[in-house]
Amino acid sequence: MIVTGLRHNPAMSYDEDLANQVRAVIGRAKGLTEKRMFGGLAFLINGNMAVSASGQGGILLRVDPAETDALAEEPCARHFEMRGRAMPGWLRVDADELDDDGLRRWVSIGVAYARALPPK
Image (cartoon, one colour):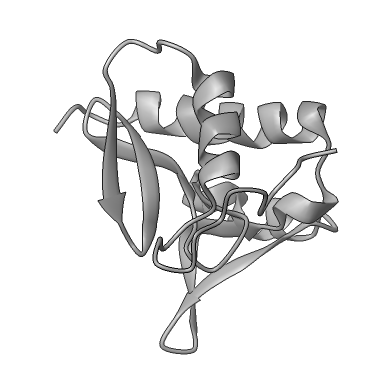
């Protein structure tokens, strides 16, 4: 099971333990950078966001817009909304419901999509 919140500092905007778990899954991926954005810590591949330890809990994940609806039907995932509007190509995934294999799966989906995009 994913452990979150152990070192969460209210002054920080995201769960550091979750960020470390995402970091461990991604490893030393080619073109990987980290950047604070969207209130969390984003992991970018060649300048494209793949996944973020979200400041609202769980992960924010970039996915193929054509697959957003199907992926959002999974129990731990939901559409990412901005100003009340669902954003195609973006999902929120609740980390509390994920085990290690689940986190690896979701992170790999985000990384694969980011790799498919032209470098920035």
